[in-house]
Picture 1: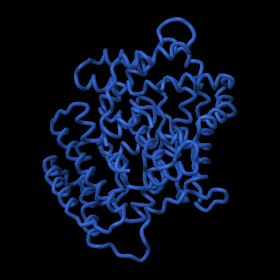
Picture 2: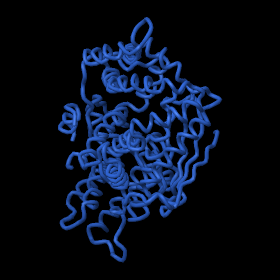
Picture 3: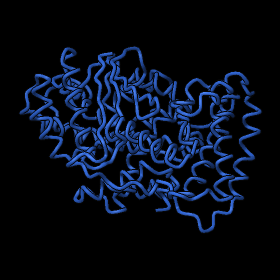
Picture 4: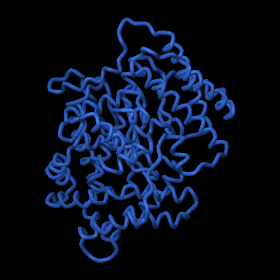
Length: 458
């Protein structure tokens, strides 16, 4: 475990590509046992669980009510239609939502869970933290202004590490030696990557291949409901590069933004992050094991600005490494994706050598967002910071500022979430050298209500 990771743990605690799922019992796909989340047949809920069920329904209704004021708050909902219709009819004032959410946290704390399974205690922790974040989001809608770190701690339970510019400059000097040509490091980096852009007319074929391979690898290790599926569409005019819209009943719509050139590495990245074993699988397993399997209605809704996002984005990012070990990814891209994209496969090793060095600059985006949102730098200076230290082209940096303007401190969930999920999985034996154990722990995390506090406790 790196010094930075230890610090983090201490500090925090459409073209329509149809992709159908497989039956859990398919030959050759034994699947990881994630049924620890499944209910015990023939048992009745106890007093504590009955009380928590009532509070969970209240939480869902309040989240739907907040979604009437905050268009981005409810990212996905697959619960009863009447609850959504009721929220639309009633349109509770923000003050009422806050006033009803706060007592739920106190009631949850008073529940006697002695003798209950760990998953039930994690459920209470989940509901409590989600409600606390809901109150913060209500306050923000009512005009409260928090610093970047205050906001990320209140919404996601996490604070991204601070790095001085000298930290990034030292990393850039290491990268500079790997980049040919003249000009600044970012100019040379952007120029280097231009040779690895997927031609627009080949996007569909390349993404289809990446998705199918990610799906195949996931099916070998995780049992998924028989009818899970998703459709991919290509869009423009968005501040993000890809998005998973979970529709419920095991189905997702995944959109890929084509505003900017898409480099070859993004095929596997997006296939894994948005699909297998990322967001799509996470949502499918939560719905299958918790919302439907146990009747825990809180998992029929996903409030975007909540601690759940740190797990969702972190596991989606780390899922790329779970599905593809570095040597496996190199082989797959060299033998399959590079030829499909019409790129020279001889360059794959050098390409990823450069990308691996560039990834060490990943926290530059968080530092840029922090400085920008805290008023230390303006938009132009933020673009320059991203250009210089995150190696983004000007167009890419401007798109990232649009994302930061809209989603604010949400940016920490990607890199910080990935580092924390990786530390948790590897701390439980799921290291790169034991792929079976890594998949097992990853699958158990996805099918559980565990949040960041649960990672730190372990």
